[in-house]
Amino acid sequence: MARLFSMQCVPHCWGGALTIAATLQIHALLPHDTWGFTSDEPMLELDTYENPFRDEIVRQPGKVEQGYVRIPPGPGVGVEILEDVVKKYARKP
Image 1 (cartoon, rainbow, N blue to C red):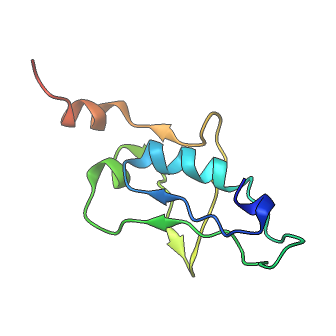
Image 2 (image 1 turned 135 degrees about the horizontal axis):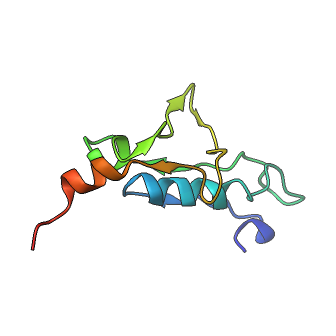
Image 3 (image 1 turned 90 degrees about the horizontal axis):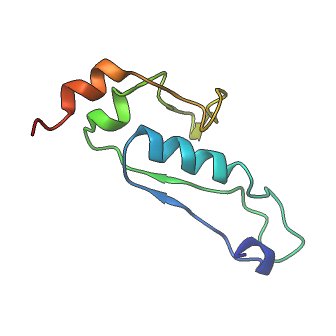
């Protein structure tokens, strides 16, 4: 809705690899140009803190390269979950 009214939309994504993958899929729907006052490319804010849920639980997590992140191409939200790593961090009852 923000882009329809010529307002820049910057999704904030602080979380694990699944949250980032889902946010990137939605982000891919944002138009690069509008007929309004702004024609900036869509931007995404990502955290850079150490985060095993972002870096370890999926095969080929999204990496920032020259200011861009590739949209994961796999089925669903695009990433493959590594079950053994998830078990490693699971809370034991």
